[in-house]
Length: 223
Image 1 (cartoon, helix red, strand yellow):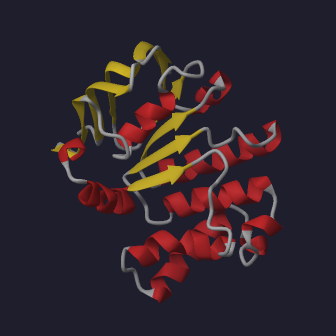
Image 2 (tube, one colour):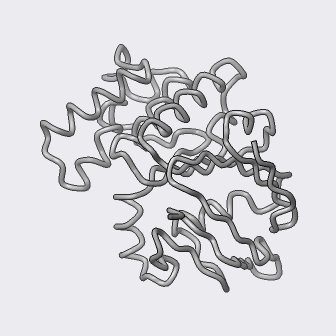
Image 3 (cartoon, one colour):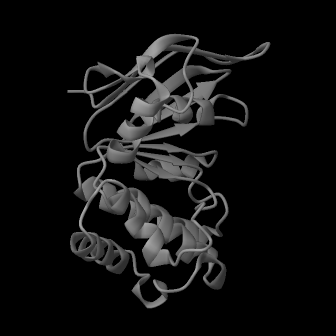
C-alpha cells in the first residue's frame, strides 16, 4: 500500500502557481529523489507532503487517510509521530546538546526517559557522533550537526522521511557521508524517503528520480 500519496496537487502563492496538478506516490521503504531547477516546486511539494502547506486543490493521503483535510492541530500531531524532517542546515535547537536534540521527538511523544536515552544513544552511535553528543550545535562541525539532525528525524522510526536539501550546506565529502548514513538508516527501518535536491548526482542513491518543471512532474526515471 502506498504510504504517502499526493493527488493532483495545485498550490498557489498569490499570482504564482507553485504546483500544478501534481501527483506522486511513495511506497514503504522506497527512496525517491525529487530534482529540478530552483523555483520548480520541490520545497513546496515537500511542505505539502509534510502537512505544513495545504493545497488549493487536490489532496495528500497517508495510508489512505486524507491528511490535507485535517485541522492544523491534528496534522501537527500526525507529523510529530509519523514524519522525520531533515533540513539543509540541520535546524537544531541551539541551547540543547546534540543528544538532547535527538531525544526531543521521543520525549514529546511520551516515551519514557530511559527508553528515550537508549534509543537515541543507538542512533547517535550509528551515525558516528557519540564523541560530540554532549556538545551544543555551535561547538560542532556542520557535518556533525547534520548527522544529529538526521538522528533526530529517524530516532522515532517514522513511516516517512522528508529531506529538503540535506547536504546543500556541506562539502562534497561530508555531504556524501551524511546522505549515505541517512538513506541507509531509513532503508533499514523501512521508512519511505522523499529527498529534495538540486544535485542530480545525489539521486543515484535512490530507487527513483522525479523531475519537476514549473510545478509539474516532467519525467520520472526508474532505477
